[in-house]
Image (cartoon, rainbow, N blue to C red; front, side, top):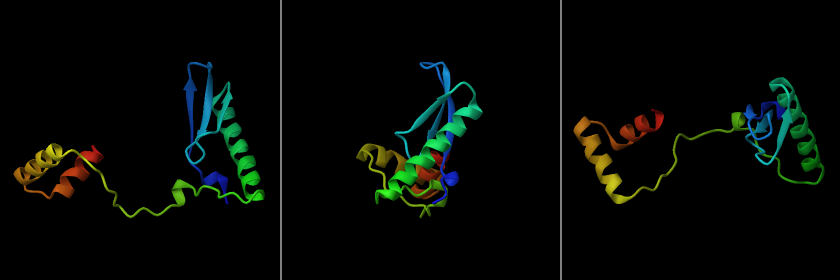
Length: 107
């Protein structure tokens, strides 16, 4: 398990007055630091330590988002009236409902 493949983000925390490092695969973890670089290094180190502990205790370790395979399909439930309006819009544009929804999601 290479924790460097995980998805990291550094953002400013107005509440703390510092930069905060985050990891998408382990959202309960964070690291505060005065600089963005230190926040990134800190979150990477804590994630690495937590993953080592998880492996040692037999816990399942999250797969890095970058290493997952995506099918390109997911199901979304919407109200019937929204479904109808989208179907009408797709018909008026001469495209499939799938193509219309994909374009709207990508926008």
